[in-house]
Structure formats: structure tokens, C-alpha cells
Image (cartoon, rainbow, N blue to C red):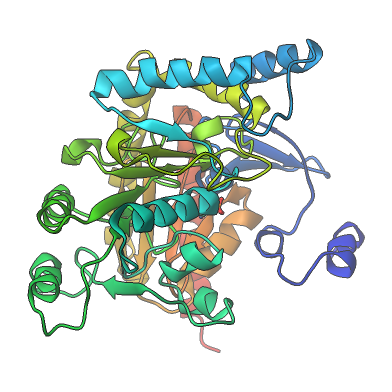
Amino acid sequence: MSEDMKVFENLESEVRSYVRNFPTIFTKTKGYKMWDKSGQEYIDFFSGAGALNYGHNDEHMKQKLIDYIVSDGITHSLDMASAAKATFLKAFNDIILKPRDMDYKIMFPGPTGTNTVESALKLARKVTGRTDVISFTNGFHGMTIGSLSVTGNAMKRKGAGIPLQNVVTMPYDNYVDDQDSIDYIERFLEDNGSGVAIPAAMILETVQGEGGINAASFSWIKKIKALCKRWGILLIIDEVQAGVGRTGSFFSFEPAGIKPDIICMSKSLSGYGLPFAATLIRPDIDIFAPGEHNGTFRGNNHAFITATAALDYWKDDQLTNNIKAKSGKTHDFLHQLVEKYPELKGEVRGRGLMVGVASEVEGLSAKIAAKAFEYGLIMETAGPNDEVFKLFPALTIDDQGLDQGLAIIEKSVTNVLKTEAQPV
Ligand code: PMP
């Protein structure tokens, strides 16, 4: 380890994690590129775990933010009325909600993903008067007790230190081969002897990010919505990672043609990587009393500014077309890669630019991601055993950046496979 990195080892908590996978000090970033202290350039296929869908330091957002700060615009205001908030609310409604025929009230919880999930779970319980929630295998919703209770990962759950209750986990789409998870869930709901009470809500990601880039089929999502309707269960879609264009449309559930009861948003909503979250609520269930759920950092004014500027990307089809073109290229590349290297025992997963390759070979994906970092590509792993290497390029990436990143992946795969093949 270099001298520079010792400060983290000496002073930062053991809980630190990404710094271990990417052990260098970053100093500068633009678009899909990052640079470290030594001047080494990296292509970013990590994008802040989905918080930087528009790339780093977008010029348009940056200028709006600078102008706002220089003009002494409001920085902190709890949930008082600010001009920045009014502008965002109006723009979000006009550019995103109205054209999609979506009628939602917008709640600003604390500024992170887990904050919006907590608010959604609490609201669903209040609306229905029920206690339980159905979550899904390999779901990931955050690290506070409520959101952790609906998260599948055993290591993360154990960290709670207390029993995680009032949750029933059901199989996600394709969790068990040849088993229809919808029939299975329906049987539990119908049967008075199943031991499963009708829950307040079901919570799910349409493409599971941390859980291994598992994409649910549109028909499965539709059936879940129908089940919820039939039993009066609220459907919470967690868009924290899959939302804001990552899968190809602003909301990941759009192609399934459904409207959730509650939508959780954070990560790329601010556009600029600033902490920001929103919970979208069907108007008739918007029943929290004033201040019943609160927090000091609700609605981050700087994020209102950049989030409003980010919505300009959704005024025409340019970004959506770019996601389509680049995701087509990425999926084609990965399919060829797993065919060309059968030793990978790889399976291509995902939708849009939320993509990954699951390798059946234990430890291989982590080695590929580590090698890629050596070659100048930032890429993380996902899945309960880190079995998936995960491609999350900026949605604004150009052909040159994408080609460069994909080439590094292939180089890393060949290098790691060659090393693995050598007798010990
Ligand atoms: N939901 C999903 C789907 C996520 O991917 C994450 C973060 N990876 C969260 C919730 C939690 O967000 P945060 O880390 O901002 O609390």
C-alpha cells in the first residue's frame, strides 16, 4: 500500500469498503472519466453505484449550481418553502409525471435511499393498518432497520444485531428454476393455513442491483401489481438504483405498464451526485400528518437546483436514444464474451445500462473487477457471493468511452482466465 493510502487505514473505520476495491486517491473527474493523484486515468463503469447516471460534474448542472451558490440562494431550509423547491416540484411534475399520466404527491424524506424506503414502509403500514411487508429474495433496500428488514443479503442482515421482523420474503421472478413465483405467492395469500398474513405492502426493484442484476420480466411485474390490487396490498417500487434512466426509461417500471402506489427515488435524482431523495405517493394514500415523518435534511436545495437542470435531459429523446444504442452494444459485447470464453461460465443479466455478467466460477468476477481496476476501469461486483461483475457506465457515455471500457473488460477476462488456468 502506498504511503498516501495509510491515512485511511489509520484513521477511517474498518467499515470502509469501496476504498479497498479501488485503492487510490481520486482527485478529479469529468463525464465518464476519473483521475487519481498520480494522474492515472480511469473509465468509470461504476457511476457512484447508480448515483451518477449523467456522469460526473455535468457542465449544465454545475453552472446552475455555481450561479445559485454565488447568488446566496438558500442552502438549508428543512421543509420550508424555497424557490428552488418550487421550481423542482413544477418541473418534475411537468417533465416527468404529467407526460406519463402519473398523479403523485411528492414527499421529501431524508436525502438517501434508505430514507425514502423507510418513509414508504411506514406510510404503507399506516395506510393499511397492517404490520407485515412482503419483500423478495435478493432484494436490497438499505441499511437502516426497516429497509434492512426487507433486504435479503445475510451478511448485511446480521449487521442489524436484532431480529428483523414483520417481513416475509417471497421468491423473485426466476428465483427457482421452473417454479412460477406468482402461483407460489398467491397460494400463500389465499390459504388461511399458510401462516402468512395479508401484508401492508410488497416492495421490489424491477431490476435488482446489489442482489445480482436480476431483471424481472414485465409480465411478472404486471402479475405482482394485479396480486396487490386483488388483495388490497400497496405496491412499493424501489427505483433508487434502477430509476432515472438506468434501464432505458425514466422509471424502470414504465415498459411493464404499471403504476405503483409508492415509488422510492434517490441516487441519480439530483443528477449531480448530491444527496437527495423523494417518495412519490398516490394522492389518496398521502396521509402522514404534518411532521409525522420528518428530518433535518429533507429536500436539499443544492440538489433541487441540479435535479431541475438534470430534467432537461428528459425534454427530448436524445438521452433515451443514447441509452438504447449503448445498451444494445454492451449486451451484444457481453453475449459474445461469454460465448468466446466458456471457462467464464457466464450469464449476461440486466436491462438497459444496468448490466452484469454472473460467473459460476467462485471468486472469478471479483478477480476480473480487480484486474480491470489495474487496467484503468472502475467496476464493482454484485450478488450474494459477489458473483456478478456489474457494468454501470454513465448514460451519457460516448462510443469511445464505452469501447475503451469494454476492451478493458475483455483484457481483464483473458488475463484472469490465463492465470486461473496455470497449475499451482
Ligand atoms: N434501494 C436500492 C435499490 C439501492 O440500490 C440502495 C443503495 N444501493 C438503497 C435502496 C439504499 O440507498 P442509500 O445507500 O442511499 O441509503
